[in-house]
Each structure stands twice: as C-alpha cells, then as structure tokens.
Amino acid sequence: MTQARFGFLIVVVLSLVALMNVGVWAADGPRQAPPMPPNTMQQPTAPAEPPLTGIKPDEVMAKYGDQKLTFGEIMFFIPAPTATSAKQLVQQWLELQMMYEAAKARGLTDDPKSKLMADLNSKQIFAKELMNKVAADVNVSESQMREYYDKNKTTDPQLSEPNRFSFTHIKVKTAEEANSVKKRLLANEPIATLAKELSTAPDAKNGGAVKKAPQMMLERQYGKEFADAMANASEGMVIGPIKVQDGFEVARHEGKLASKVKPFEEVAPMIKRNLEQKAKMEATEKFRETLKKDSASKSYTSPLLEAPKAEEAKSAKEPNLPVDNTKAAQDNSVKKK
Image 1 (cartoon, rainbow, N blue to C red):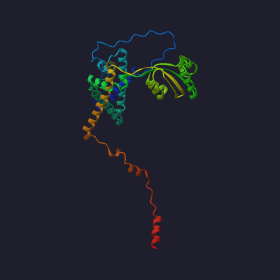
Image 2: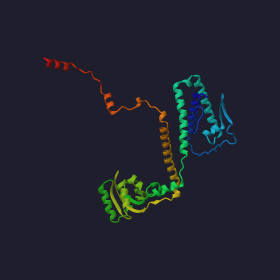
Image 3: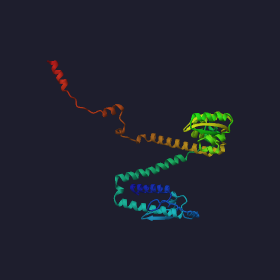
C-alpha cells in the first residue's frame, strides 16, 4: 500500500470517527431527526433495535475493488453495532472508497498539499493512540485516594456538606425603609406579615422564608456581606440593613445546619476521577517532555523563525532616511574661508 493511499485511508478513518460522534450518518451526510408534531397523544416508544450477534470478526461486510471492510473493523467504531448502524457505516465507507478512487484518478494522491495533509492526519491518529496508551497506564490506588481525603476533607468543598442557613428576609428599595423595617422587627412585629406587606422580593407572598440555603448560594444571590453577616449571626438575631444589588435587605436568622464532612465511601468515585485526570495530564506531559529531550538531536528549527530581539525589532521599524550632507558641507566651507 502506497503512503498516499494509506494516508487517504486515515482520512477515511477520521471521517468515520467524526460521523460516529454525530451518532447518525448516511451516504448524503448526517441527518437530523424530524421535529415532533405539535400533537397531543403520546406515541408509544419503538423497541430498541438489538445489536448484531453471531458474526465473526473476520466476516467481510463490504467490498470495493480489492478493499474489504470486516465486521471486526466495524466494531472499531461501533462496539455493539445494530444492523441499521452497521449498514449506515458501510454506506459511508463505500462512498469514501469511491471518493478516494476519484481523487486518485484526478492526480490528487500525487498533489504535494494532499500528500502532506494525509501524512499529518495519519501521524495524528498514531500520536493520539500513543498518548491514550500512556494515560491508560496511570492507576490511582485506594491508599492515594484515602491520603487525599484525609489531607483535604476540611478544605476541599467537594468533600463536605456546606453550611446551610434558614432565614426570613425583607427587601425594600431604600435605606430609610430598611431601618424602619428593622425597628418594627425589634419591636416584635411578625416578620412574615411584614414581608408580605413590604418586601419587593419574589418570595414575599410566602412570608420571605428561605430554608436550608447553602452559604455559596447566599453569596451569589444576596452578596458576600449578607452571607458573612448570616454566618456570624445566631438564631433569632436580626441582621441588616445590608445593601444588595437592587435594594436593601433585613433578615432574621432562623437556624443553621453546620458543615459536615462526607464519608469516604460517598466521595471515593469523585476523588478517583479527579486524581486520575490530574495524573494522566502529568503523565502525558512528562512523556512529551521526555520525547522532546530524547529526540533533540533529530529536531531542527530554522533560525529564521526566531523572534527578533527588542533592539533589532525597533531598528527594523525605523525607516532608513537619506542623509542630507548639504548643510554640513556649507558649514565646512565657511570655516575654511
């Protein structure tokens, strides 16, 4: 098989992979599912098509000239193909074989640009598979997971339940209104009644009650000053007035659920996923750097690609103006006289 043909077949593979990511493909390109009718009755769901079984991996599923596509090769793209999905892939494969033959007939397989693109595409696939194998060798042990858990369970917010606060609040437009509300609350007027009467917040009709809100949600919705004041208050205390984005808040602390660390068993899958992701990135980066170091004697980059130094860049920008020696010559003439 020539390098050009091999490179083009790599492009075929890339095209099939792209179509696999779409999920539905056909000879005339990916098709979108038709919009649902604006209809009424719910239609029964069609049973899922079962995957093909009992077919040997070396069974030839399609041919084009001397090229063959086996069932095992189809499973490279679709691990459990149905008859429909396998047929659609076959149709795409046949079309790409026809396109290659037409490209070859037009001399594109000898075109320098096409040959370069095919070569780079083939190397890109091998490079990706290489890095996948490097990443696949990474393994995070349970002892590493427990070590991370023990060291970070009080600092990593993913490993603990956040502080949660219950409170009743009243939002008004001006500071004067907010001070008046606070005085009435301190005089033991019912806060829920005042919220329904005075608050401009969406929850006013429910008496302004907020139940078990995480502290981060308070910061996002009411601002850091409000969240900090709530965290530092105790049950029954009135806080405010506090300036928020579109008014002033007065609130009464109704209770707190303190943060607690989640059990290891609950967060172990998340810890494993995060540690593996980090370890794989580090492993592939280290592998790249090692390759660069080991292949330094084979690599060459033209000095023409080096960025000019600051002084050189400055002088390059300055125009070379012609020198006018007329005045200097006249001055010398006067001195001689």
